[in-house]
Amino acid sequence: MDERRHSRRAAPAHDIDITIGGNRPARMVDVSCDGAHLELASALNPRGECRISLPLPGGTVRIKARVIHCKLTGFSAPDSGGHLVYRAGIRFLDVDPKLAASISLAFPPPISKPIRNGPIKIKVNVDALEHAAEAGKHGAN
Image (cartoon, rainbow, N blue to C red):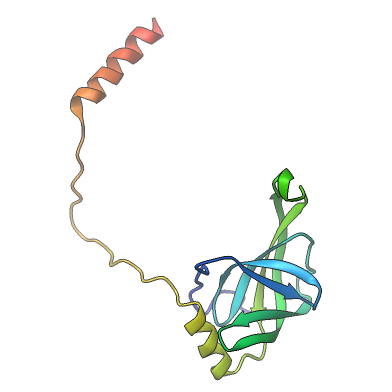
């Protein structure tokens, strides 16, 4: 099974809280019409399936998904409970074209900047560079 993304993911403009399996809260880091990257307080079973509740402008939809990966990434801040933080990548299953379009409209991917060809202009403050070099010589002695 090819697990590479088929669509560009977009980070929501504000925090999107979702529910996994009806009772596990998670925060959506980014989303595409094919899947999402989630942050949550408990691990998901890789290759397992789950249902998520995703809020969209037309109402909340429940989507069946497969967990592609899940790993422990750290701890939350002590003022927010100090719990473990996991990051999981999920792939949506059985998403029809209408739902895919709704997701894409609700979370449009960022507009990429054109690739720049040719030379790049850089301003260098030569006096500051020479001063830093001199300070380094005197500090080393």
